Image 1 (cartoon, rainbow over the protein chains, first blue to last red):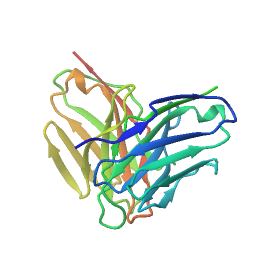
Image 2 (tube, rainbow over the protein chains, first blue to last red):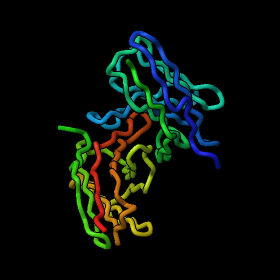
Image 3 (cartoon, one colour):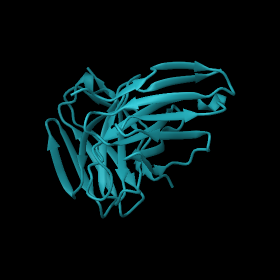
Image 4 (tube, rainbow over the protein chains, first blue to last red):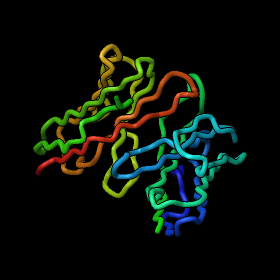
Length: 116
Length: 112
């Protein structure tokens, strides 16, 4: 079974631009979570999607947004990029959501975003 | 107080020894606990999950959970240089609207 895939793997953008990152979960997984990882802050939760609905949201500004499609693929968008947005963005998929669901998450390789 | 706390390390152990990694969490109603391994430049990979008090063994890895003490640990027996990585503890509360929170990780160095 194929793992979680993320595109693009590397991205260089300029301050003020916007960026869209894509994530395809493991086949059969319906929940997708996004994380930002930086050396100083570790893994920070951005949001979680299940059945095309955002179920959880972390403490990030509104410039960070996401969506999920009917095939469970997900995208996240960052508008008006700032230097501090430079990070590794990780997508993780899991089987389900809600009480009793397995929250074992499987991570994609990540997208390395550099903002100059 | 951080929600999930880990000693950043580095924790250095000789090859063949037992490595003990610890994690404490603040949310008493947390229900699901996970250990991930992350090699430098790579994404985290799930080692194991634990949901009930006690020990859970998988090969050379043993996870231990004590909900009363809000403490979860990971033991690695017969440590190998290939085990050198950062180990992340993750905790999830009860119910769907509780996110998974990660600790900042403990860096493990296994010395040949």
